[in-house]
Every structure is written in structure tokens, then in C-alpha cells.
Image (tube, rainbow over all chains, first blue to last red; front, top):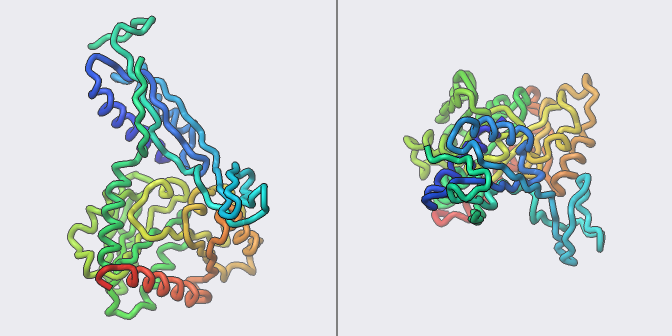
Length: 126
Length: 224
């Protein structure tokens, strides 16, 4: 259950980043989570929502970009998604393939909105 | 609405500290190993048997993590190597800052081998780089042989699987070859050592692995 700590790191990064854009608030953050990153998406979302409720980041939306495990064949350069742990190259059947994606735990982007620009206009600076 | 690209790791602060630790270990030829398993798989017992076999003049130190108590450190101190308990007070894994803090009054250059026993947990420790040269995962024969498939991340990221408590094999329906095969499905080519800390069977193979790794690290270090 380290999702709380991860959510905390994400929110720290969001706060630091949004402070660089005066007059705006953080509207949405996108976090990339790999298949073998050992982070449970539901638990992470639960922690994220619990930690933003009734705070300055209450209106922050979370987007999770799931990254499947992908390998590249060392022999024929074919790239493929590993399903059911099958790491054999689907093109040349080589087992000499290397992981190129799937253990991401990354901040992809942040969307900042100017105060008052939102159609809902519900955000106050208080 | 403006989109700001961040493109960095969520745990970049941890990774930054871990990278500094790794540089220091490499610079001084220290082999650092991060030992991970479920609670009760035999990490501390394996360390006891390992320390027991090492000559007293070896430059070895141990950091052992638990949520509470320093029981493990007390067990390991009997072998006269420096041992420090890291009590996380609730956190389910060690992070790089804890390692940095607990190393602060040891001289890294006085060490050749640093063994880190992580908190018993097969999930969370796999996300936190501690600056180690390799992760080692333990799986005891009283657990399921499908554990590598259920908890792929740690098996994916570990260099070595140690199957422990093999003395219990006659009494439990554990298919040790299936366990190794499952680990290799997640991590092709993964090295597997089977041992019993109780009887000592298989310990030599583990100590050989350790010796080879220590030799590799020393040969890559600028201090030789």
C-alpha cells in the first residue's frame, strides 16, 4: 500500500509546478502507470481523491495512462506487447527480446487553467 | 487551458538519492543488494546463515528494515558485523532517503558488501530504488508457485530468485520447477538458487553467486 506515498509525490509535484504559473490553478494531471510498476490504479485513484478532497487541489482531475509491457526483439527489431508473459518475438520467434516499456511511473503532463476562464467559474482564489 | 509537459518520474526525488548512492557504491567498489520477499519467507534466516559463513575480517554491513521492533537487527548482530535496524514506523517499504540517513555514520569506503533486508512485502519495495546493484527476491516453498505471476513486478526487477525452506519440500505440495518456470516467464533468464537456511543445503550456490557479484563490482570500481 504505497499508493498513498505515490499520490503524495504527485500532488507535491503538481503544487510546485502550478506555482510557476501565477493566476492559474491545476485542472488535470496525467500520470503514466506501467503494467509492471506495482502500482494499483484503483488504490492510487482512491488515495489521490482522498488527498485532494477539501484542499486547494479539490478540482484537480486525475488521468491515468496505462502502459502495457512492451518488448523489442534484439534480432529483428520487432516491437510487441507482451501478453500473458509471452516474451517470444511474434515475428521471428526469438527469445532474445528486451523490455522497452511497462514499468513507468511518470508524470506525463499537467493542465493549468486561468482563474475565471472555466465555464463553470466555480474556482475561487480563497 | 494550458498543457504543461512534465515528463519525469513520479518518484524522481527517491531516484535522485538512489542514483547518488549507487555512484558512491560503485566508486568504492561496494556491492549493495536489496533483499525482498513476503513476510516470513526467510530473509533474516538467510542473512544469519550468510553472515555466519563470512570470515570475520570481511567488510560487510547490514541494514534491516521493519515496520516496528529491532528484533532482526538483534538476531544479526550476533555475527559481529555492523548492523543497523531501520524502523519505518508504518511505511511498508524502504526508500532511498532512509538508506542515506542510516548510512550517514558509516564510511562507505570501509565496506565491500552492503546487504539491505527490505520490509517484508512483495509489492511496494519494487517501486523504490535504493541504489542497489541488484534486487534479490525470496520465495519460500510454503507459498504458491504461481507467486511470480501474481506479483510480476518484483520478479521482473530482481536479478536472482532464491527459493527458500527447501527442507519442507517433502511436506508441502510445492512444485519448485513450476515456480522457477513462472519466474522465468516473467523474467526470462532469471537466475534461481534453491536453498534451506535450516539444513544449509544450497547455501554454497548462493555464496558463489555472491562472490561472483562482489568480484564483478570490485573489477568495475575505480579503486579496484
